[in-house]
Length: 198
Image 1 (cartoon, rainbow, N blue to C red):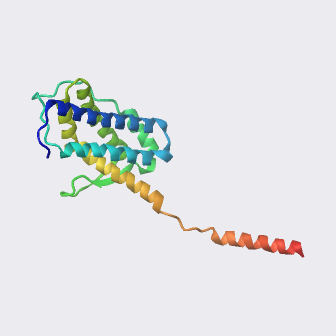
Image 2: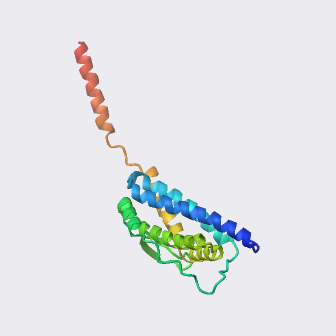
Image 3: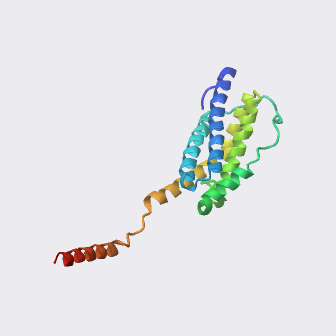
């Protein structure tokens, strides 16, 4: 864990995290809105990888402490239904996957990538609203707490699922069954050419 930080350092760190969070939120909404199944999985893989690095920075840091005992009201949670539905349509048959939430108490959980990304977005956006109202301490506390308790684990599981889809796409090759037909067609063409020459 790092040593205690000054208010100025905390504000700088909060700004760095906020920039990364905002970039992630914009990107995943754009992916869902664009509706391109061919690019959705690799782009989501990239974005989730990047936000996990942000989470790792939070997880490696000392525990942040909010200034107030109770969280200030920053309004209702963001509406992520459109995002969730858009991603579910894009991911289609690869949306549902299984993962182990706690490897030390292994229990396989079925989930949807679209639901989990929507949950990650909700957690991150909530912290971003604290940051935008000028409360860096509360923003950092929430991002760190929610990373350890929820979105970090979900993002790791989603990353593994997305990587598995990419791996299957790149590595699974169907045996080439048309080779015999191609050879036969080529031989037939050669035979026809030979007959014409005679």
